[in-house]
Length: 276
Ligand SMILES: Nc1ncnc2c1ncn2[C@@H]1O[C@H](COP(=O)(O)OP(=O)(O)O)[C@@H](O)[C@H]1O
Ligand SMILES: [Mg+2]
Image 1 (cartoon, rainbow, N blue to C red):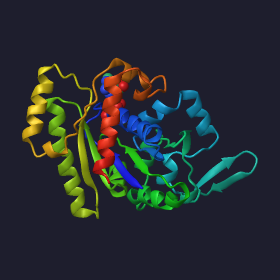
Image 2 (spheres, rainbow, N blue to C red; image 1 turned 120 degrees about the vertical axis):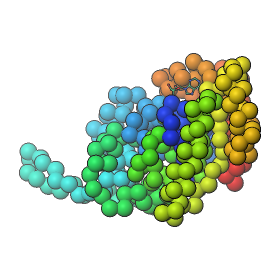
Image 3 (cartoon, helix red, strand yellow; image 1 turned 45 degrees about the vertical axis):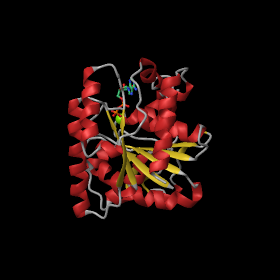
Image 4 (cartoon, rainbow, N blue to C red; image 1 turned 135 degrees about the horizontal axis):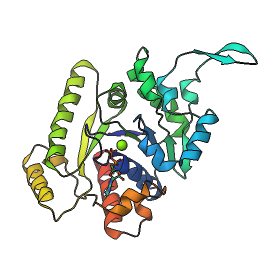
């Protein structure tokens, strides 16, 4: 089971789009069994895979989300029938991801993470790792992809502790590149205090418009920086149709776009190679 986090300290660089489509590509094309974990309180990857009604019903039924992993507290539940009773959290190994389609599972995100972050809880940063160890044999996932929020937070630390690799999606513009160095300094800083085994498995360019000056400058910068050996050969082009897939629950491979399909399959193959 390879655990890979998609990380960038900047928002809007394509982390979610890349996470969802790498999972789709691994599941449908490579026939690998994948779990996508949405630890971003803004839960965009969940929104890409479940429509609002479906998600509300899922929560109403009491189905599991990332909250069940992080919030293990027993809390009082007030009921008009039974008075006050306690809700005891499910065992961590019983938390169930949702099957999206063949080979593709999702542990949905939850806006409630904002609330949980404010409440005390011991060892919360280790829970994601514990959850993955607990479900390892039951599900036998080949890949676990973690879509992360763009801010240093307890969720980010938990992803770093649970992952073997991180992949950095970047938009080819000067500001985004400064973000990669910042990201590395944050990870190095965490490494000093925590027992992290996480390694970089690549830098992948997203939302590429290859005729532009900023793209050409970005490539020049990248090729002379220490990140050059991490750069993926394939790059995801910028397309309105890709942005639209998030609204209609489709994937890049469903689009009739040879260049975009070849990009996502090439990126997925390189990820597989670099995490062997
Ligand atoms: N290759 C692309 N072409 C066009 N739009 C894209 C592409 N990748 C992402 N987007 C759009 O850009 C916005 C930010 O992308 P997203 O994947 O949510 O980034 P992040 O998770 O880093 O915040 C979204 O509206 C998304 O639909
Ligand atoms: Mg996102």
